[in-house]
Length: 113
Image 1: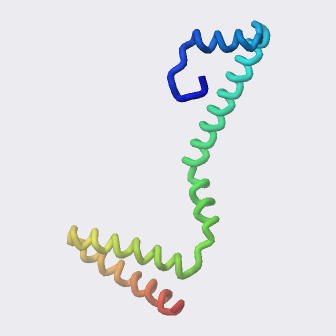
Image 2 (image 1 turned 45 degrees about the vertical axis):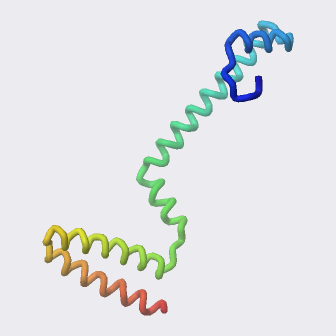
C-alpha cells in the first residue's frame, strides 16, 4: 500500500482492521488528521494573505540589503526599459526626462568603478 498506486477505501479499512485500532482509536486518529489539515489550511491562508500585503513586499525587498551599485544597476535597467517603451510610443518628452535620470545613475556607476 506504500507505492503510488491508487488505494481503495476497502483496502484502507482492511489495513486499519489489521492494526486492531478499534472505533475509539480510529476516531482519535480521524480527529488528529482533520485538526492537522485545518491547521495547514489556515497557515496556508495566512501565508498567502501576508505575502499579498504591501508591507511584506517592502520588508522582503529591504532584506536584500543592496549596495549602491546594485541599486543603480537596477534603476538603469528600469530606465532603459522605459526609454524603449516611450521611444516606441513616440513620447519624446518622457524620453528626455529619463535621459536626465540615466545621467545621474551613470555618474553613480562610474564612481563605483
